Length: 235
Ligand SMILES: Cc1cc2nc3c(=O)[nH]c(=O)nc-3n(C[C@H](O)[C@H](O)[C@H](O)COP(=O)(O)OP(=O)(O)OC[C@H]3O[C@@H](n4cnc5c(N)ncnc54)[C@H](O)[C@@H]3O)c2cc1C
Image 1 (cartoon, rainbow, N blue to C red):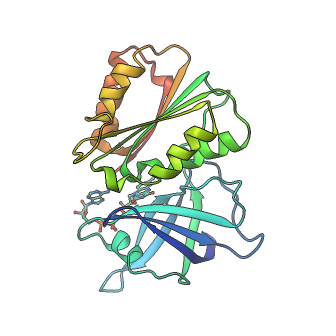
Image 2: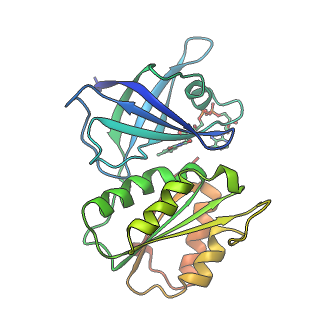
């Protein structure tokens, strides 16, 4: 039987009406080990009592002891994501896992490019925060696509991170901004203007299937080799 790991919900951070970051704490020394990029499974029973299981990527790095964070979008009519939005601080939640093979490819490329839309930031955040903490000195770029400027998960933290680490570049892009002087469009647009030359680069992508497929096609048309494109698609 797969082991369940109990935790307590300690903090909730809102990013607009539909996205929340949840911080869970485990009893000292009781958190499972995981690789940045992996996910946990969460079980919730529906109205008929039938248990449904869904994966959620760990958004925090392993070096943060006894903690994991999950960044979750509320999907209209969705059982498990809406269940998360009913939770209050202090709630007890059990996780199965960790699982998943979306991990950093070593040896690392000279320049790592992380590309996400929305909550797709979760596994990538775990990866680049762990690398920066370990003192990785190679160039890291994050291309982060969202719709609106007031709903970008971790936006202020990412701006601060870029100030703290000169090798970390943060490139947000919005598809439907209201009052925004930064780039407007889709993540592919920034890839074409900033990273058209594939040499020395590995790209890590996470998001919904259409975005990942479009971006892979874009990178391949620029000459990126398949081995230099790592991705996780969410259905
Ligand atoms: C490896 C992996 C990691 C994941 N990590 C995360 C994560 O970190 N954060 C996160 O928010 N999600 C993540 N997901 C998606 C998550 O597992 C669920 O699929 C999502 O929360 C919807 O589940 P639900 O039970 O709420 O909806 P369901 O009850 O399964 O679906 C309800 C309806 O919504 C539609 N739908 C399902 N998912 C989406 C979606 N994402 N967007 C729009 N419509 C949808 C369905 O087609 C259905 O019509 C991950 C998926 C995978 C495969």
